[in-house]
Length: 135
Image (tube, rainbow, N blue to C red):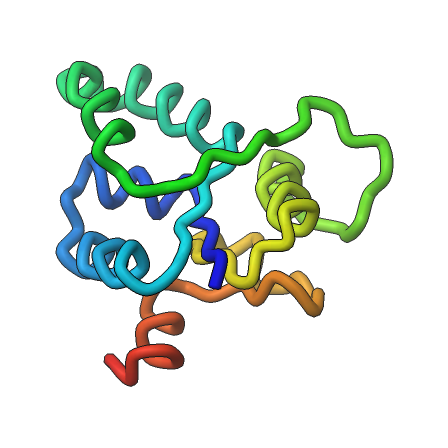
């Protein structure tokens, strides 16, 4: 499966060294194709530059060693495919739809009310429970 990781997952993995998320990423890298959109890469960089300056030097190494496919997020989208409360989150899901992503993993509550067929939107714990029977 092609699995896209949202910005908040990347930040938690990189900045906070979340054991759960790093374990999830390890599983994904062995059994699935991890996809990250260019918008999320830019957003991670902005957050780290703004809030975690002491970790900025390590960000390039994080992305160099992270096993993922980078897909381009368009800067301007004219046609709205769905409604979402936070317009900043629109581009991530729009990119996932355009790139035929199977699952979007995010901890963002703005994705909870979105009803679409594909991608399936799951939180990390939901993904682990559904696909690995882990609680």
